[in-house]
Amino acid sequence: MRTAVAVPAGLGLIALAFGVAFSTPGDAQVEASFAVTGGLGEQIVSEHLVATVDEVGLVREVEVGFWRGTTAGIWLLIDATIDARVERTTVDVEVYVDGVRYSGTDRAGSATIDAGVVDAGFPLTGSALVELPADVTELPGARTAVLRIGTGGDQRLDSVIELVIDLTALEVRDSAERESVRDGVS
Amino acid sequence: MTWLRRNRWFLVALVVLIPGAFVVSLIPRWFPYQGAQPQPDAVALGETATYSGAEITLTGLEVLDGGPLNAPANADVVVATIAFDVVDPRDGAYCEITVVSDEAGYERRWESETVSDSDYEIPDRFAQTCTFAERGAYDLQLTFLVPHGQVEDPAVQISSSAGLPRVLRLS
Amino acid sequence: MPPLVIVGVAAVGGLIAIPLGGWDTVQLQSRVLPEQPIGQPYTGHRLSTAIDDVYLTDEHPDGYTEPDPGTRFLVVIATMENVTDEPQEPLGSKGFYAFTIPGLLELDREFLISDYSTRLMRDDSNGPSLTPGVPDTVQFVFVVDDGLFAAGDEVRIGLTDATPESADLYSGTRWARPYVAVEVPAVIRDQS
Image (tube, rainbow over all chains, first blue to last red; front, side):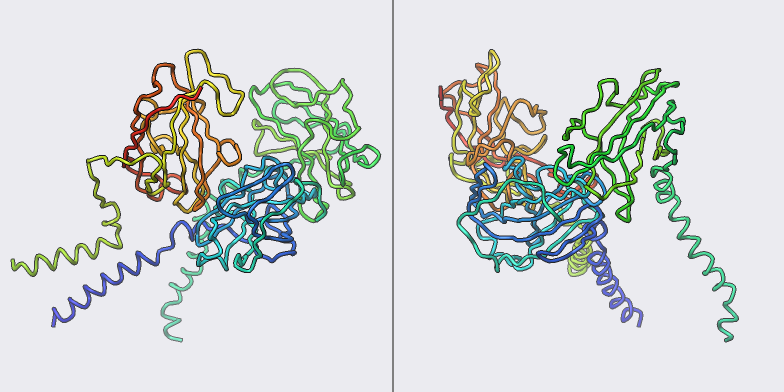
C-alpha cells in the first residue's frame, strides 16, 4: 500500500518540479515594457512620446537627405511624426521579429528621426531605417513584426509605443527617397 | 454562520494583516522613491527664497511671441531673469533650470537654449550659466523655446544637486 | 544494490536536474586548434566570421588620420554575420573579441578603444553595429608599433567563440568561457 502511494507521489512531485520550473515568469515577463499600441496613421501616446507612424515599407536602397543607404539585407522604411510628451528625450526605433531585435540604423548620421532628441510640443517629421535580413518576409514571425518606438537605453518596465506590422503585406521597392528629419505638425 | 462565527477573529486579522503586509512591502523601495522625487517649493515673482546656499529671486519672466523674433517654426520664447546671491557656496553642486507648464493638462518641461535660435539676444551683463560654487551675487538670464500659443503662464524650476529633493518653482 | 536500481536512481537524478538547470553548462571542448583557410567563415555563437585580408599601411583608410611616429596601421578585413538575436559590435568587448591577433589583441587582455577603429566597407560608416542575419564586410584598423609586424609575416588570427549565458548583474547576454576556436593563418600584405 505504501509503495503504491509513494511511487505515484514521487513521480507527481517530479512533474510538479517541472511545472514550477517552466511556469515561473522569467525576467522577460517580470520586466516587460508597458506597450501602448496602435495602428498606422493613429496618434499613439506613451509616457514619453507622442508618435504617428504614417507609412512603413520595405526598400532595397534608400536615400535620406544626403545619405544613400545600401544593405545586404533590406530596409524597413518608417515615416513618422514624433514629439516628446513631457520633456526632451531621445528617440529609439526598434523592430522585433520572432524575438530578434533589430535597431534603427545610425549610419545615416543626423538625417533620421531617431538620431537626435525631441522636445515637448515640437513634433519632428522624418524617417527611420531598420536593417532587416533579406529573407525577413519568409520568417515565421514576419506577419506579426513589432515596431517599437521608445526612448532608448534601458526600456525594462518603461512605457513604449508599439505597432504590429505584417511585413509580408508590404510592397518591396527597389529604391526610395526621403527628406532629412524636419519640423512637423502632429 | 457557525463557521464564520468560529473563525471571525482570524478573518478580522486577515482584513488587518493583508493591507498591513502591503504597506510593509512598500517600505524598502516605494517610500524612499517617493521621498526622493523633486518636491517643488512655490516662490512668487519678486520673492526671495534661500536654496542650496543661495538667495534666489525671479526678477522677470516673459513669454515672447516667436513670430516677430524669427524663432524656429511653432516656437515662442520664454525669457527668465533670475538674481542669485550665493552666501554659502556649494562646490560641485549641479544646477539645472527648466521652464515648466501644466497648461496641456499635465506638466511639461523645456530646457534652456545654449545658443539663441531667435533674434532675442541676452544682454552681456547677464550670466548664462548658474552656479552655486562661488560666493557673490550675479544676475542670470536664460531663454527657452516653448510651443507657440501653448504656454502662457509658465514657472521656472531651479534644482541643485545640493538641494534635492527640494526644488524651487518660481513664477 | 541491483544494477537496475543504480541506473534508475541515476536516471531520476538526471531527470530532476533538467528543470534545475543541471545540464545547461555541460560542454565538450577540443584542445586541438583546427586551421581555417582565409576567406572561409567560422560560425560561433555570436558571429560568423571570415578573415578576408590583412595588411600593413601608413595611410589610414579614413584618408585623414596620420600615424603617430613609430606606428603603422594593421588593417584586417573580415566578412561577418551576427548570428544572435540582437545587434552586435563587430569586435566585441574585453574578454570576448571576435578574433585574436597574437601580440596585439588577445582574450582577457585590456585593449584601448582608441587603438582601433571599425568601418563598414559598404558605406564607410564608422563604428557600425551588425544587424542579426545581415552579413557585411567590416574593416578593422589597429594602431601598431612599427616593427611588431612586417609584411610577409604569417600571423595566426584566432577566431573565437564563447557560451552565451543570461547575465545576472545586467540585462542581456554574458559571454562565458571565451576561447579561440580556430586559427586562420594569414600572410600580412604591405599596402603603401
